Length: 105
Image 1 (cartoon, rainbow, N blue to C red):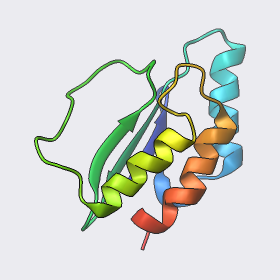
Image 2: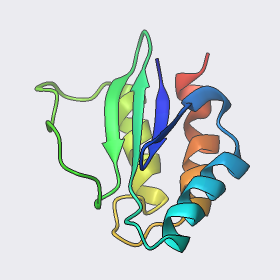
Image 3: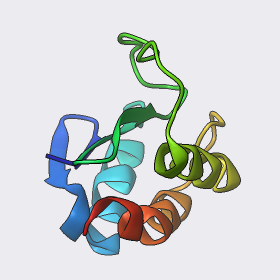
Image 4: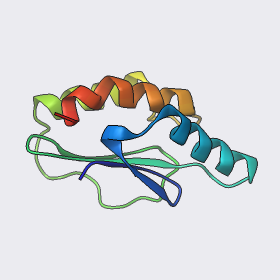
């Protein structure tokens, strides 16, 4: 199942709303807690995990080259600057909007 995780909060990727993303990012910022986002994408043609730089590091790399859809998802992630330490909730939502068609069909 594809999902988005912000801090300890988790939501299905395919129906996450802009409001949910903003709420969880801004709540953590307001409380002075580090904000990390992880996106787990799994379906018949995609199997990947994307994390903002401030996430605790897990296992890296899947040992295979990304397929065409995964490469496109990596490109969108980078274009929205989610691979940079000071990412914004708006950019995470933009990523979801842009990548949804590659994952949620």
